[in-house]
Image (cartoon, rainbow, N blue to C red; front, side, top):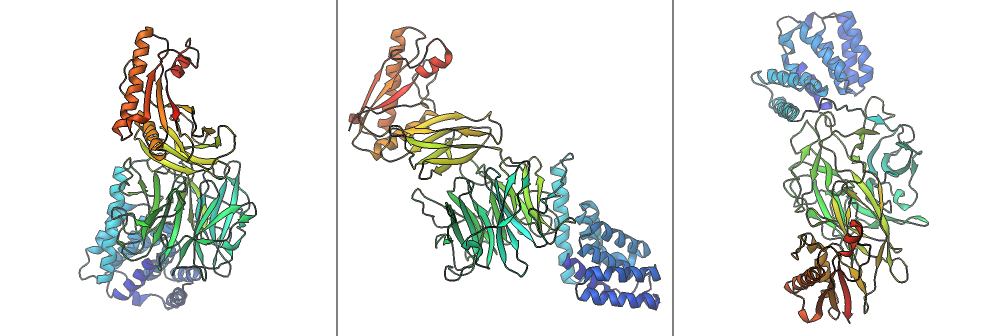
Length: 637
């Protein structure tokens, strides 16, 4: 809005003639107060200029320049309603004199969301011949923004949506600015950045208690707050890691770098630079970590991108090493600045800001969604009133997919930027999530096993999460509701674990617990291949079976000395001889699949047992379903 006031003051110096308003005939006393107001405006003392301009108008109610300047000041203070009122009072005095002011008038109309009126006003301005090239360019830019806003409104109708940001209150906000919020996956921990009273930036945290009630924010202890040059911070989904941007003397590769701290029994560890695969000699900031801690998204100004700052991603491999940062591409990054990414707990929905994509003016918030092929959708503007004519900052969204948190300097701010909570409207929400947690154990010793837990979306067959357990075997992650998933667990020296889980009907924010027991690879060790499925009374494999069978193939390749047998079983429905033949054909189908995948047939056996050896009551459907099974047994080492 400061640019708006600059345009307004420039226009004042250009107008020389008018049909009705005669500046030279303004009462001298009114002009004196107006002159004092201009002095205050030159010093950016906007609130002090207001009473002086009001006094000038009270002395001469035809003082159009005073109305216009007062409108400009109110616009600078984001009091758009008052600004529009004063512009319209000035316009009523003299429409010809007012015409060049249609540009700042349009900006304030847009500030109120009145984009149709704003477009009409800016078109009136652009019809003036021989415009100053700078203000003409500004007018054309605003026209483009207003046209976008009108088109967006026509395509996205949400009349029942109410945008009502709620200040998080004295527990979180202070007379200083708070911004860049980040949440743990269960909403239990909120971290953010606060501007210091004497400059610098500091990291604070707060815990949620009850229904969106936060404890008093405290400065995060440890060395991560000792350095004064810091910026954005993010917390991992499980609350165990913090990654932040900083310029730590002796530990940086150049400008701002990304650092990581780990939570320990004695508090947060010392910051560690994330290394050259992520950091560059240039500005690297705005980190956000995927819920499985396998992908780190951030913004960087390094050369080779598409604009000022671009979004990048780095992937962490099974050994814990971060790969080289990859630019997220021209479909997302522009000639402008893309910053403040936030990946939701569903691991599919990412929000960010951009001033290069079409929008309302300045930086807008956008959303992209990951597709089945691991590609990203086209960026979608979040729309008005979340996006405005101002610069929008970062946003975090709770796991429920509804509650969002962002920084704003609204009228009820405690000072500067405050953190607010609001509800996202339908259409731009991420998937709701459920919490999935448990332990991976050794089936014999019952001791926890550090392992990789892979979660596959059954509808696509693609991995959605890859979670590393801690040293005790504990894992914690989220999954989007509405789908079914397969859990695969692998650890060297053990038979893999694979099981399908139906989570499509689980309520959002509910917790799903699953303890997993792995069997050591030894003679006669056996597992049921729970996800190997066949058509009814047939021996053709269903496509979904290949998710689990691929894990058996990998097991055999990783352990080239073991030999296995595949045993097929049925329930007792039908003729015994038919069941025996069906189980035999099914077990052979599985072995044939392994051979096609490159496994030596001499390492493989198969046998069908029909309805023999039931493991459950055949008198119930649930029992019969358990008896229809395919087993893997280690028969040779």
